[in-house]
Image 1 (cartoon, rainbow, N blue to C red):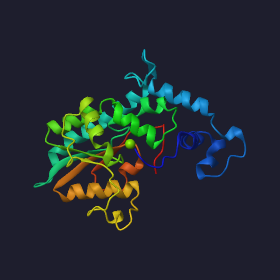
Image 2 (cartoon, protein in one colour):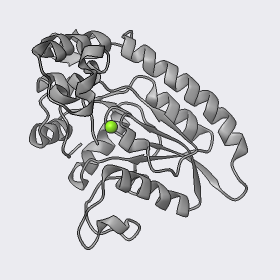
Image 3 (cartoon, rainbow, N blue to C red):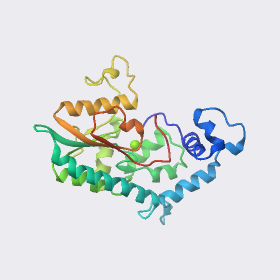
Image 4 (cartoon, helix red, strand yellow):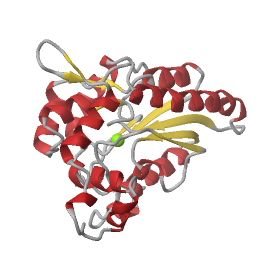
Amino acid sequence: MPRTRIRLLTATAVAAATLCAVGAANATGSAPRSDREIPNLTDVVNEIKAYYGDTVDASGEHYASASSNYAKQVAGIEAKAGAYLREAVRHTRPGRKPAIVLDVDDTSLLTYNYELEVGFVYSPASNDAYIQNKNMAAVFGMPAVANWAADHGVTVFWITGRPETQRAATVRNLGAVGYTSSADPSHLYLNTKEPTAYLPCSAPTYTCTTTDYKSGTRKHIESLGYDIAADFGDQYSDLNGGYAGRTFKLPNPMYYLP
Ligand SMILES: [Mg+2]
């Protein structure tokens, strides 16, 4: 996920501020007038860890738990997506090929272990080192959603903000945690930030927003004869811009990406 991230400090503070009336002004971007309008960062981190059901193994690695409230919330979304997809595959337009699109980080693969490792302080360098050398766990239940789709004639595509230099590691990680459909170059789109014929914002100077890049890539996929029944993402920038029958937003209280 190589990009400018509005980090935990800002993102969760804003998100948490919207929960209390006194802090609501913060969501508009105005500076807090008192520390009482700011959620305490230690408390926010502890809430995030509780939500993910933080567990620590013998080597000190932190993982999310399959019995966590995060996992339960994800399972509820997946149940809705599954019911929708079972119907959608029966109603694909004649001559079109059904497809789904998944984001990678915190949609297909869970960054929680990485986030804990770096104390929620993302950097491109630490993120790249992690991706190249370790495998992230799957987002609970998402391999089953993707594999069900693949087993029922639905082509699975990934569109990620990860750079081209992380292609091999991403393919390795997706396969290692149980995604069975092909993540070959025609099914896994990474953000090259190079001039791309189907992305008008990519040339002569690359000015694509995440939404431009992702929706423009979905448009391209549909131009190849696919109907994207569902688009899964943990950020609204994964989901906005059309070219999907339905969107499914997965939870992510750890960071916000415009
Ligand atoms: Mg993501």
